[in-house]
Image (cartoon, rainbow, N blue to C red; front, side, top):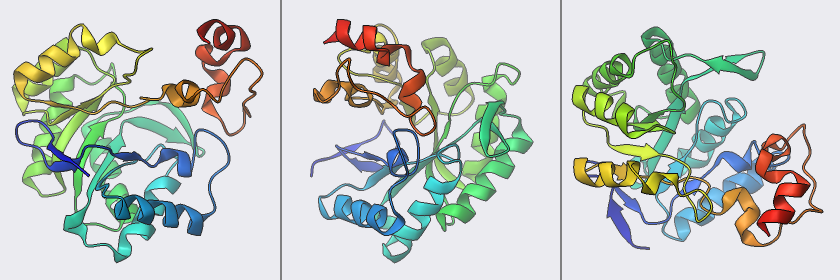
Length: 243
């Protein structure tokens, strides 16, 4: 497995990373725990060292899964990325919240679930319009200084937001959706990341399954367990048109 440095100052990560969300949440029923652990260990055996999770996945259960799976793995042999920023109420996402006190509570809880002393990359999952990104970046800077996290990133942001955050403390990675049918980052975000030395981590590179060729207008999604049931791209009409 090839490895790449994530941005100018980021960690060395496998060229292929693993988003662990789907093992617990988002695209169907959760995988049985031991089977999910086996999948994560198999990824390590294939040379993958870069794993992505978030408190919102489950919520919470995906971080707990990684904490269990990696308890027998040398901590310095893997790179763990997690995320904060959604307001979670009654075990469901209920908006966004990136107030400094919320971020601090979130990172402590994530460290406990992940069974680790630090998180390698900590992303703001989605922007909170009530909290300036400068305030978020300042909190991230303090968490880095305290050793709670090693690096920070932003998810689903544009170039202006990246510039503002980077001016407070260098951003290590941007995680935006990017694939052959989601190419918006090519216009401004990718060139900016290149110029500032920020790593770019794409999510949805296979179009959340659509680009595998195994999904067509006859495919149905369980609205209770599969987020795609509510995505406009996954209506029968859209899937037929995109085929």
